[in-house]
Image (cartoon, rainbow, N blue to C red; front, side):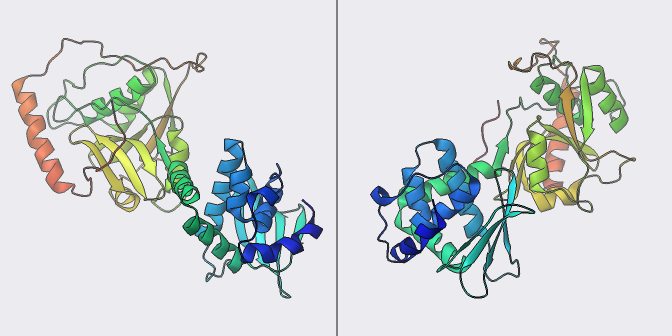
Length: 342
């Protein structure tokens, strides 16, 4: 699409005179996708795109533009699309400039502004239900990462580390021992010993170091969950993180005492055990050392002693501790619509 052809179509967009029949096929380059939104409206580009990948690119672009606050001081507006950075800025004499950052192609468009571009996309969302529904679904999908785990309860009052260990082992297809131990009931498991147990079972640990001061971001947790569930260390308790929704700022966890729970990112950060040794962290990733057959999922690991059952004293201890934990940790909430955990 040439720059020369843009001038004629800008006025038509403002009066909703552009029909899908008069539109050209969206181009492959990200900058051309942006230009197509200017010339034909994002809904027109969306409707004329056949490939689902192109539709998702357009939805992602629309999402980025409408989430930008025109009243903020963030000029030029910056977008990250297809792993490339772009800047959009208003020109002093009117019009806008698109530039690939830092040293890339630059194009200028007359007769439109960042503010009008944003309003145009909002208008498309309000006037076309199929597009708005697709946008909402895409926003939710891109904000959510969830991994399937086998949720396990601890079988002794001091065995949250063993239950958390087993959830991680099972996810990686490794068989596991019962979630109990022979320690004194008042003696917990050290972080060093817990990590050592996972290493002995063929996993390598990758501490997730916080980018901020004692604070993780949803984006960090999203990226880490792509490798599997995370071991999560609170003060005097372990659980497993298995989901995140960046749009809602929600973290999904499985607590060996309480079962499925969710928490706000802010609450999770506030309750993590940040007193760690050098190069350790309250959230830990784990990967299988021998992952030569990673193309096929090995399935979940199984419990080694299927007939094991813990005694009545242990069951009573777990029940009492679970009740106390629920009272003292009201920030761990029962989710209304949590994805199914097997």
